[in-house]
Length: 190
Image 1 (cartoon, rainbow, N blue to C red):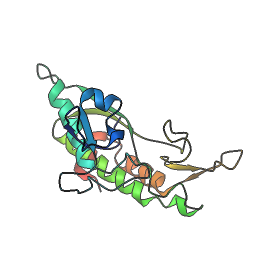
Image 2 (cartoon, helix red, strand yellow; image 1 turned 180 degrees about the horizontal axis):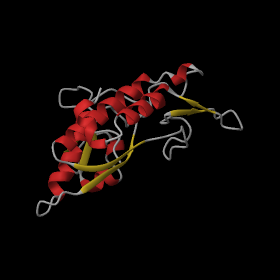
Image 3 (cartoon, helix red, strand yellow; image 1 turned 45 degrees about the horizontal axis):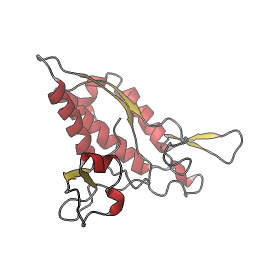
Image 4 (spheres, rainbow, N blue to C red; image 1 turned 135 degrees about the vertical axis):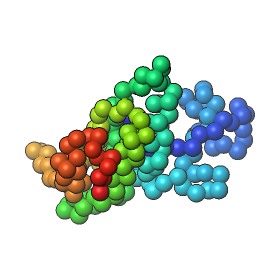
């Protein structure tokens, strides 16, 4: 799974400069500090609706290539399958229908991430599968129904949970149709 990238650094165990909320849990156990800002205060990438999610396509490329280099043994590359990759668009949870269907932020995210995936394949990664997250707006484990990751809009107020295609679902369908040969996509990605 890959959604976003962050900067990480080691921190001293008794630092007074690191916010308390970042000093508890698995981050403290690993002695890591996570930030979406670089040393100059610049945001790593555009912010999704979720506060933990920034658009950082170069990070996707870097992690695929890191896995490829780290786990290549005797010239046998690891097979990589991206089982989840997606974004929730800013303010999408409060946009009225049908404005919510025009999710250009998500289209841009997928276009950039799939482009970086193509570069990783071209540069030698053995990626055999890619799955967009998610087909439908759904219940997110950390956010419930407050954030929408779906390529298709679900009306949560309708007992039938009526679904509508967002523009991203049409874009994704067209992209997949045009690039049915996964390896071919690296040469003619729009």
